[in-house]
Amino acid sequence: MSTSVLYDVPGPRQRRLTLIISIVAAIAVLAGAYYLVYLPLDEKGQFSLDLWGPLVDPSNENFTLVWQRIWVGIENTLIAAALAIVSSLVIGTLLGVLRIQLKSIAGNRYAGFSSPVAYLLRGLGAGLAVLTRICVEVFRGLPVVITIFFVARGFPEFGITLDTLWYLVIGLTIYNGVVIAEILRSGMEGLPFGQREAAVAIGLSPFQTTTLILLPQAFRIMLPALISQLVVVLKDTSLGFIISYEETLNIGKQIIGVLSNPIQVYFVIAVLFILVNYSLSKLAQYVQKRLARGRKTANLPTAADVAPVDAGAAV
Image 1 (cartoon, helix red, strand yellow):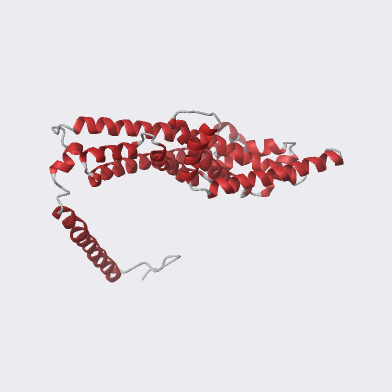
Image 2 (image 1 turned 90 degrees about the vertical axis):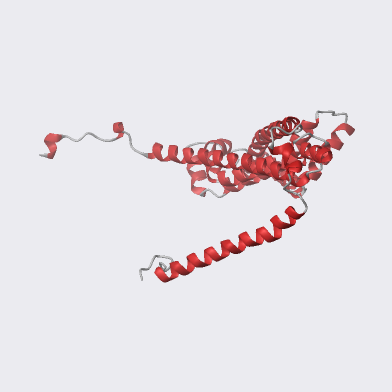
């Protein structure tokens, strides 16, 4: 039996056993789904065309109206998600850079100043660093639904009246902005310290070091975590129902109130969310591969970098 670095390669007998177990497990899952899911739903008439017709049968009198309403919900969901994603990335990036800068100030990176000014800057940086950390921990610890609710109820109390869309976007931005800030901050702090020392050696300021050296690398390194957070933003738009924003889930509740088919409507909405989130994930993975390919290509020597060979010298 051949041996791999980490495990023994299974032989013919082990492969047959694995295949048999996989087939038995698949049959067991299908049988469980048939007896525990399909049969109970079928006995209650959940597969009847009366319930599915408005969603799958174009000849149904409600089909066009139902999908018009669902499309309105999808549009509102995508608009809120796009605005929240952009604003969360902007706020998160600024907050992440700010936290790194405040840590630099508190760490006495301004030794060139006179002593009183240096102490003042260090104290100010330490105070602001504590304040920003408290804000991050508070907003990251609050459930996003509570943040959205307080934004929608608190802003009008201060005379700030906005469209329902903006209450949802602001609530999502507050929560996801601090999460993205922490993702980027951890990515920048995880980079080798020698890069900071090299930046200082060539005369870059702490701000230039952060924005030109650390931040671009943190974006590339933490891209998988950023992708996951952007998918969370899209899913969290469904919480807009608590402030009566007409996103997809809220539209679905309205349809259910008229047609009384919750399983069918929620199934269709779930499929739509899965398709959109899957598309977003694949797009982000494509961007990540393009960035990685571009970085590898940039490291390859060009024709101008290769010294020409003197044929006469080689003889």
